[in-house]
Image 1: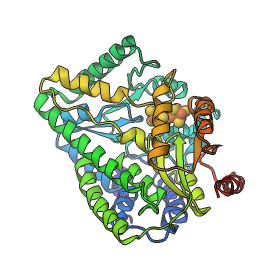
Image 2: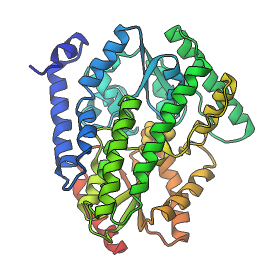
Image 3: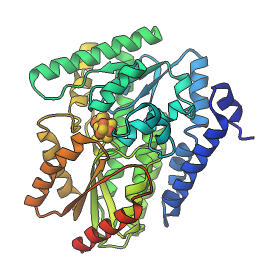
Length: 419
Ligand code: BJ8
């Protein structure tokens, strides 16, 4: 019996179906991440985080709850983890990246919504998500329409993310952050105080700094780490304890520094450099990165929520009073340039900077099927890339393997164009 089987039973999971889920994810992992050559040795830890996401990590959360802590499930990078942590709650991102649970999601939700949402809810509906039964609070947000409406069904706390960036919108967002703080305090029975908040701001800033350092190494030709491994690190970032994660990431970064000095890389010098831009690839979803790198290019940066959008801005931690800290947090999170904003000029400016900094040869715009925000915004993104003579291709896909052959052909043709 698997060492966690008893725990899954006690949580009321469908243990047999859950085993099938883990088997399916493991198979995909081996075919993609596990099939790579010349990986940094320190990646072992991040692989372990992914493998333990339904085991050791859940046991850890149960233990924290037994000691009086609370566990908060989140579904978007607009939710300020610092505030939850300052009230002794543990926030973990719960987005689903597996095809396995989609048919279960489609039993309740429409087929014509994005796979991330169907996969997430499919895990809960099929009783294969160990986080659902231990969650003390779910936090949603008003980003895209499908997510917004899904929260109504499950009765989550919803943060209002505005859709523009005027003064009015900043005020509204500030209030949403204050309301979140109040809700967390009500849940935990603990006040968010300036001293502890200052500590959690530091913890998250350190984590972002370490991720920034990792991505600096990807600017080298050849990069010392594959895009697929950098994605694994990002997926671990959304699940792991932040202090432990940063410690291990710093070790990986030291190894990468050494690999750069010694010229060790999974790629040859001069390998074509690709940026992935658009929707996030959450745990279980390694499809696009793997396809691109198996076709002979290097993914050197992700302009996504499992990439730059997650780590690019720090929270200013100069203020020592609570209001100033909340304001600094609201400002930092409002800088995230999700396609739900209109107009989203900040994202266009950011893309121009990133393609220069990472000397990108071509851009793959990654659109999860039915994600209208990124799909329509792809027109503007293509426009700015065209002006700079950077080829781009739009890949609209889901989590299934059905279109792999067709995608491979399109990606090969695109990379040929770069060569
Ligand atoms: S800030 S990208 S994490 S909402 S891919 S569910 S937008 S239909 S994941 Fe996202 Fe927050 Fe935006 Fe980032 Fe909707 Fe699009 Fe699906 Fe998305």
